[in-house]
Image (tube, rainbow, N blue to C red; front, top):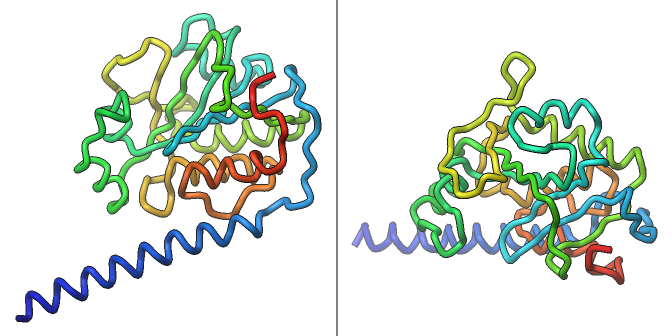
Length: 230
């Protein structure tokens, strides 16, 4: 009898926690930071790109938009780092290293990542081109926005002797590397929380808390008429 009561209370607690979790994150969408931000027409030479799918977001820079210092920091880890695009995202270390595709998701790893304070990693992809469809949103930026977004990303890396600390990972792709992150991953600091924080601190009108992918995308879908890479 006591076990049944405990189970009922546990289910009730989990239900209330999830309802609060989603309700608060949804409500915050309507009270974003930088609400007065106005979007200009995307300019290929000064643009940040936001990739999104149903669960994950990445922030993409054309190589020419990165500072010389940041490119020099990344260059030892990539071939031909002077051209193409760099894509940055964040996630749970174990989940990212062992989940090359969403269909490979291990439920145990996913639950562990969300329910515990687990080590985080920064995922850096270097690509010769990016997709030109509605999964990539072009975000107009000026020099100040580019530098601030870059600075926030740089601060997410964990460093040793001034260099980012690489993480050994299965080589699913020759274009992707992983690095240790300063912040641990959990239910309240997800890959999308990280993306939202970077963009919010760069000046975009982002909610103060974005645990879900669509919450990062929401203000841009609402404000930009052209969602495809120019």
